[in-house]
Image (cartoon, rainbow, N blue to C red; front, side, top):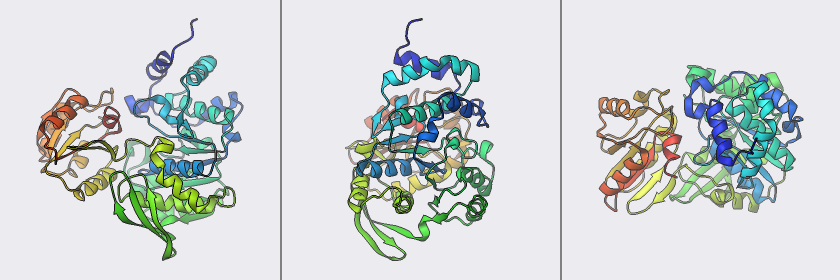
Length: 430
């Protein structure tokens, strides 16, 4: 049989194997059996990695990219696994910011197709195994691995890392993770391993006890980053933010630059600072390396999709916030910016209730509704109807691209266009 091309390989992965980001719940498997079997056949690549494992509802992607960038600035070879991807599947698997080569993806799938047929893994399980195998073969110094969903039963959770990090806990994927914050936190806490230190980015009254109890059970040292580090935003720009860092209430670092926007990033930054401190005995990182990594975040890791500037006059921003907590923070950030009229290009996925999120959106904005181009996308007329009930007014468009084009044609040079609602809406414009 002729060797598949890269596009043909992706077609096999996407069409033959259900992918949660495209089709939703039917692609989700609550079990680690398949990933264990895959990695056993691959000679346990995850056991050959020094890793940092990151879970959470919001902020885990940003935190993963920050840590990877800091470690790269320290002169290390760093594998970074995140999900989902925006435009290219290989965004999920990077080493020092470079995407996994197309031929390596093709070769992995071709070499192990018989194994896939025997085990019948999901798309995500294959991707995780591919990442671990690639990082092990390339002998990375560190692998920074973001959980896909939850933690306890996520395919990445076969790792025994050097450090665990858990970011913000809020409501998302409740059909899998639970209806209350303690239930969701319990699933995230599933990444805590015996004796492995864990950094919790934010002290939340409803979830703190869950993490303390799990850490005590596993004999895992635990620290809440916000109880030791405080990041104060001193200067905010769309391309770069500057922070003053306090440690134990005293001045610690001045004018720390972060190549990302949004005051909410301070919580992620606090977790990164705590993680770097706790790693010092295993991986020393100097202040200069820390500063360089944070200052050069986007260039070093290809960090995209979060408060990314797509154009100016009018200013066009995209952001992949997609749940209640994320959207609320995004709208708070929009209120801090100066502009004439606000235009919002918006789409959602069908397995999330739009009503609560739509209530968080500003009434004075002009809306351009569209369905993201995936089977899981919410029908644009259903979205527009729900938006109308929430007091939002706008027009529907056949695609995200057409919605954005209409917004650009309508907006004045001093206006702001925000594109969001779903990672998959942002994927069509970055």
